[in-house]
Image 1 (tube, one colour):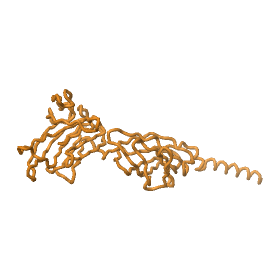
Image 2 (spheres, rainbow, N blue to C red; image 1 turned 45 degrees about the horizontal axis):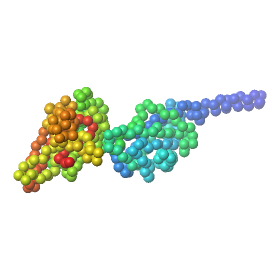
Image 3 (cartoon, one colour; image 1 turned 180 degrees about the vertical axis):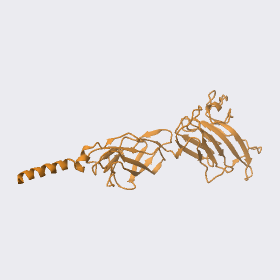
Image 4 (cartoon, one colour; image 1 turned 120 degrees about the horizontal axis):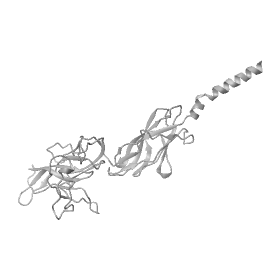
Length: 327
């Protein structure tokens, strides 16, 4: 009888062990995904956050991760703001000693990096790793690409929606002040199709130094209207305010912009159909349709004798026209 009871106990204990949480965790398919920022500013160092999601349907915990750098990104010390990080081969980071990410939960990790880019071309992150062990010594989680985000536009200042505006003015300038710059993205693309979804942008406002503004949007089909104000510029020898606003969208081999005097737009909408053909034979864009033109152009005398201030409204199509009164 005792022997029979012992056999029954052993059988029951073994059965319970087979269905224990540990055994169940070992049997489920462990999955995860991650989202990297849509835009990251350029600089050294900059910080940005990446979120890891444990999408495992059963019981499983992520206890260590590995992140590989995207082209244009170099991780720099101290690497993270929160947890232990080790720089390994290929410039990758292994992150350990963080509270485990349970099933159906997520955690954000903030990284330090040197980032180079001009916001014009997306950079793709290699697929990261997630592991059940404390130092990548356990089971790897399978990548679940659903709702993941593995591309970042490097060098962008942020995101702007269709129909949204970017106030890129310097020194708190308002609409009548030198250095004022307001960019309004069209609700339609340059061909008239509906504009959908936000896009990354980068604005370089040098209106008070080099007398120019450069706009970069990650959607090369976007169109926008820009209002810009110059700083104080000297009048000519006869006392006349003779400066003309200039535009450019291509560069010379030395990196300088190919500026021309801004032609007058055919209409006031931010559309390719409003862009005239360049008819100036000495221009680098001669006999082609321009990508930026002037809707309005005025000037006023400056409080400083012998100087004037200029105001211009420019339509741009494409992702990176430059404009202003510089060369």
